[in-house]
Image (cartoon, rainbow, N blue to C red; front, side, top):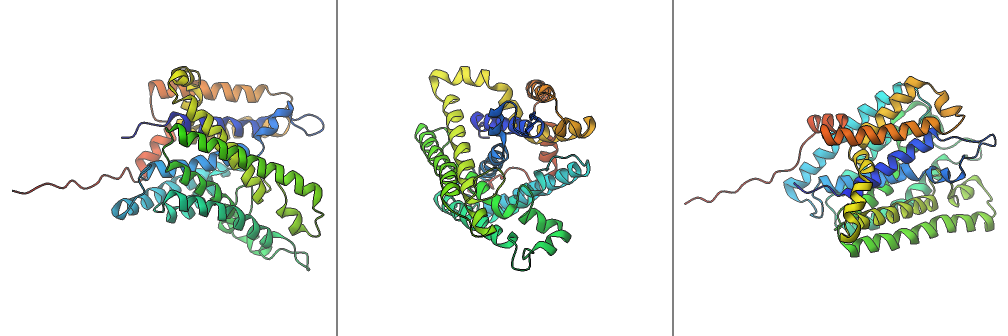
Length: 359
């Protein structure tokens, strides 16, 4: 069995903590984050979670080896069964009625949309991710922009179709978010322990962040929108699901991942970094459990912990308790509870048939 890539676990743990900040962080009377730097948790943690989900798909369907033949069919089954479990967990969490937009049902649908591409070479998956980052947001904008009669082309259908809603609306439309997972699938097929690959991810990430956020800021100041559609296409603000936002979020994720991979693999600092960042790594290794339990905790505590925060005390307790419990759980128990359930209910690792020689 391949050894876990600690940098990926740490990045996933950081994404979980970021979503805690997005859901529980304090806002001042003006509605702005308090402290102001909490703005980093707007949209980016969930995007990081999606990209890392794509990385995970790559890792459990062959890693650097692109699956072929029986291994490819087995990979499809692994994705389909995992998507089913994630969907059920997500639906159960939605039934709790918290004010949090539960990400899991959309993730499950996006898993299925990504499955047909796991047999492609990394460079081709990367190209498809770039195409999806342009086509998906544009198509979504066209479908949801009001026409001459004041209604969007799919507005009526969306009101009555939950699955169509997962694909096209909400905070995490699969039509758009498939770009993130395809990018993750591409990244997960690379040698993530290679300093060259880490450097490439870092440079690419910075470039994408500059183009996405910088380009969005520039266009919003210089382009005069003549329609709702034009205004949507040049956006780069959180959860706008526009191309420039996707590029910026993807850039941040790649840059952060590159740094975490480097500090946990480079000999001079790896040992210390792994020790210091172990709580985040443990949280990332059991991210499904950590994310789901925090939704349950919000349901128990009540919606006020999301809507009417007086400070960041609740957030602080969520973060500290999660990091401590996950660290102790991984140390003394091992696999997280929902990760254990996932392992029991889904298709396991592919085992190539053993060929025996006959005399």
